[in-house]
Length: 332
Image 1: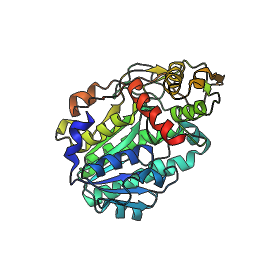
Image 2: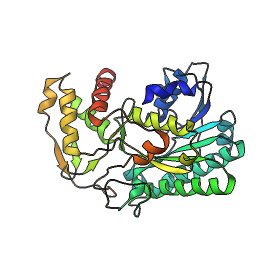
Image 3: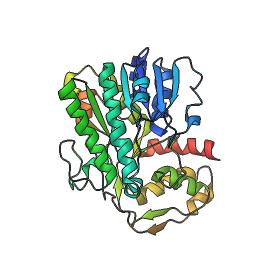
């Protein structure tokens, strides 16, 4: 679990791309607070510098405002680091459907720039955020890393291309890469605002304001919701593992349970009503299904357990308890 491995990052030189975003800023904070020497690269397109307030003035932390679509910026950012945790991307299936070109420029072109810069700088390991969207129209549950379907959105295509590039760069140039297929990550610092906000922070803010969340479909779609601390654990394990069999592959990063959207809202209301009893009475509305959405998602985490010792501590209920307390404190 996370507490048992944090001490192992001391004095490691790490670049976190997208480090002002939700996942990246949480990774940066844990690394810096445990003695790592961290460089953060972010263009602040979807991230926020205030996510880094707790560490921005720390002597072990350097912030570079820049874009991964610029190769010179990538080279500069990588130059002082031995490890790269590549979190930078334009997320969201709907965003990619509306604007596939920009998603491709960032998620494919930017990814390739980071791989080139990392290869040229001789980094020890390149760990990158992949996505469960890569499973596409594959019907089988739980999702196993070697069985994928056809992508259902431009975003899913970009994340699959990342995996292909990482594999080719290892085989061609010898750089060690590990891809982490995230499953619906949630937790502190996840932005509830904007057109492409994730479902948990978006619904949380609406419930806190006594507004009705609108579900896409009838609420039966299910996801393997994954708390941020599980994701941080997996990034650190992937960065530090000395198991050669663990390298140059992809892993599901999840808890290994699925929750449908109706269940999710019930848990949100239960946790938030401890702070405000009126939230329990807020009604939910239902709308049309969303294009590109996968109906159900559930991860097998056997490969991650066996090869890198991944042992996620937080179930959805445990994670939501922590997250709702954070949102109540920071959004009210």
